[in-house]
Amino acid sequence: MGPVPVEMSRERFEELVGEALDEVPVELLTMMNNVVFMVEDAPADGSDDLLGLYEGTALTDRGWDYAGVLPDRITIYRLPTLKVCDTETDVIDEVAITVVHEIAHHFGIDDHRLHELGWG
Image (cartoon, rainbow, N blue to C red; front, side, top):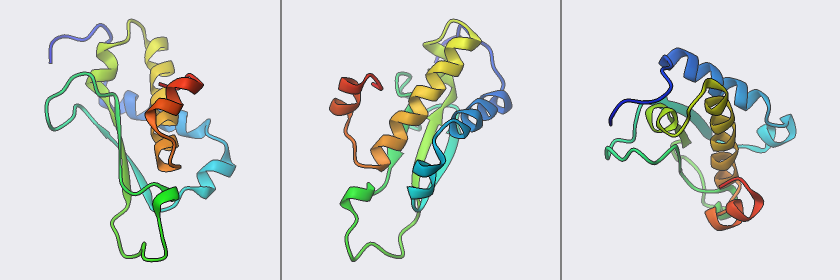
């Protein structure tokens, strides 16, 4: 991945992810089940256009046999996010959008619907 327009430490980026989570309504956070949030510099496959990733079984797809599984993972990627932003304010906004987008996947909302709602 090449140079990024905005330089930001991993620690600062993690703070922004935490701040974005703080803005999510408590009612939604309490409904989330068996999910962890991660911050990584970049996707393992080296792609530089993926800002976040939800891996797991959406709440809407969990049945009676959902038990004993590892937590779902929501990963927010630092370097791809910095690559698409021009200012720290852009990073703050993009992190918030990405966090909401990935949480929506946990609730079973697909990319098409998220784009319709303006969270694409």
